[in-house]
Length: 75
Image 1 (cartoon, one colour):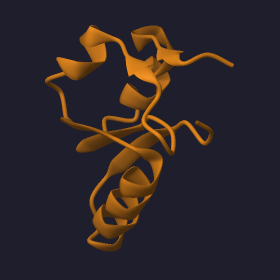
Image 2: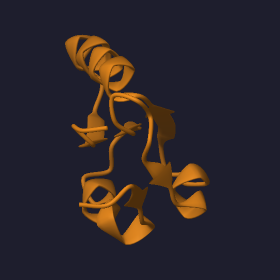
Image 3: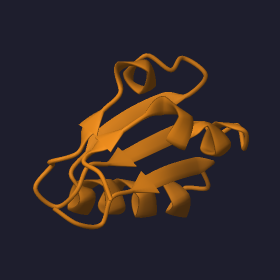
Image 4: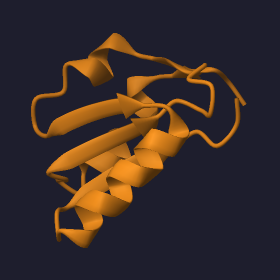
């Protein structure tokens, strides 16, 4: 486990061509996100604490949007 999310760890999610990518940074928001992830321009990127990320994911999926999420479940 690590508290740093590198770009190469999420590239497989981008292969699905999501409209929205959600990065969950943990319950306390401890995970540090690679700057390259923040500049992805092929989709909308949201970087949120885990609970907020989960809520946004469910909201967008219920609207039928194509959403991918990297979920950091601890911290």
